Image 1: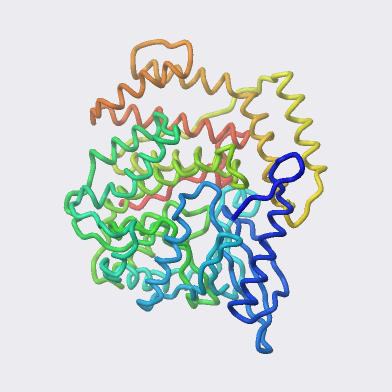
Image 2: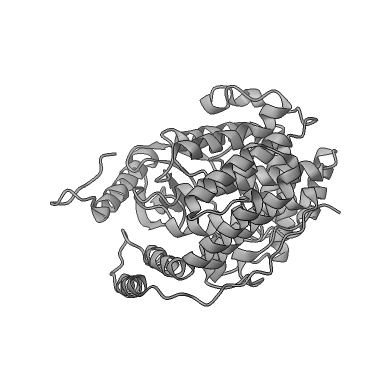
Length: 473
């Protein structure tokens, strides 16, 4: 779809939104013989529109699922193709009606139930996710649906390019998704020592006995329900062929940003559905992989050249999710971590304080519209808010990080860049005897970053600091 520009050659968001809405109305009229009554753009990672239309005397709802600003060229069509295969195989997914060019999207039934939480940190901080008794029962039923999804033959997806060459060995199965994301991160210049260690750890600790490759949701646990009934499974943009225990790890990764309830109980239910006991240490391994992949992806949200997106969510997830990946490693290796860190008194930076606070005030005065929703203004406002905290605590963060690198390398450094280069050299050696000290300092690093983002010391009431729920005895 061609971008609209104003007279100065700049991208015109209002014109773009108007064109999207016109394209939606035209598609509904031509393909469903309906007349659009209402279009609402939803607060999500990507452009999505809830569409209400009338046809044959009835009112119905659709979801137009658009493309992420940071997505690959074929990612959106990949998800549509996967969902069509799942529907054909009796999996409860919304019916897919087809592809749309303007806007770039695919169309599916909108499941009529209460809107589920977006599963994003910036919303969970303001409105912590809750779990009703009925939703919990639906969660248990979802495990039965997940077991059925895992039984769909891998051969059913052979026509989808990304799934056409499934991994075969235990190593390929374990590392297929993390390696792909890590390579993308390298190409995007987003890999730092925290990711280097996690990737090395994953490579050194492959569960060699896991040799069965299955279709997996990739980001499991997302579904719509009404009462205790599961209505539809959702979100297959990172679906893959891999270990079913990767999907089980997703529950730990998403909880409690999106409240998943009693995680071990969910695993017991899955074991009952499949007739095979869940291997909790393998789930622990894939927890590291899932969180590593998610944290690298979060860095992509911070691409300043991507139109739309969610920059502040990338900041929050980078800090919190990466820290939780280290907590997953620590549980498997019985490493005790230090969560008792404190922020020092902030150091005022005169120019940053004045300029960023002015920016925050003026952003709150910006008018909103269908092309610039109130929630988008709040996301924009949160960027200078974070940068203000970063300016006030940056020197402390660098000083503490340099001290930690000195303990590992035995050398002193004048700046973080040279210290990180030396730390990367140590990590590249892959010495398991050094895992404990590296896990400790890198966990502390990510925790300090989260403290800067929050502007507080660790606080159990803030989802940003929620620890990963343990699953081992």
